Amino acid sequence: MSAFVEFAPAKINLGLSVGVPDVDGYHPLGSLVVFASVGDRLSFNPAPDLVLRCNGPFGENLGSGPDNLVLRAARALQSATGTTSGAHITLHKTLPVASGIGGGSADAAASLRGLNQMWNCGLKARQLENIGADIGADIPVCVQSRARYMRGRGEILEDVSGWPALDAVLINPGISVATKDVFARFDQLGLGAALTDAAFVPASHKNDALIQLESLTNDLTIAACEEVSVIGELLGELAKHPKTHLARLCGSGATCMALTTSAQEATDLAAELRLHHPQYWIRPVTLGISSRAQAPS
Image (tube, rainbow, N blue to C red):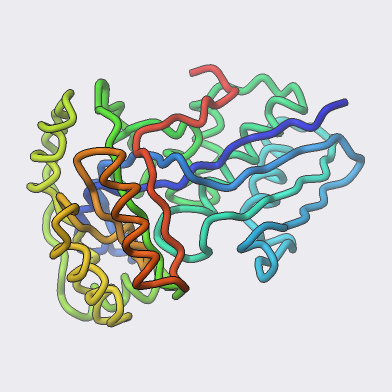
């Protein structure tokens, strides 16, 4: 039998509003989320037990023990469906770890999709999202990997119909950033404000979307730059480049993105950045792809 294979695309917050923490310490969010043409890949083979093996450029130092989100998602699916089936899972890790582009959450979502198919669980996408929400706040939006507006702690998802594909460059300086540390600094700085409940009305054409994004922000930027100074330096460099339409931090960092007006400009910008930063992870990407989740909506 051929292995079941799932693509786990990078999650990109095109805008990220962060409110003041609730009494339990969690921050309400408002975020326009899309997915990139780069990501990890998971393969699944039937087996009597659950085993995870990691390989790829960023897999060597990634733990494959029971706390890995891929295995946590697998066990949660077993518990929700009562299946006793197992799987040997291989995670080919091509996304930097702890980099602000949701690699772990995307991997967990891909685990839910792939095992739901291989084990013939028959769960729909919304059911997989509910299972994922108990594991991590970013997992639900990664299950279907399409443009959504995310609210609450990540569990409230609004479809963003007609959002166009955009071109960008992702660049990571090789520094892992702990999300909890950035949020802690965010709170220390007294940042955060009341979030609006107004519906997000998306642009449907590329040029309009680029203009619309200028009015959005990533509220974690100041805190992330204070945690890791190279983030601010990188954002400044990208913002000054003539091929960059808009430079923005991805999630809690340290990955940054430069939105461009065309795929060719993204390719050219990536090539120039590699000359100046040969040690950095740099990828020209399309933003707006779907993972084609196996579960029906």
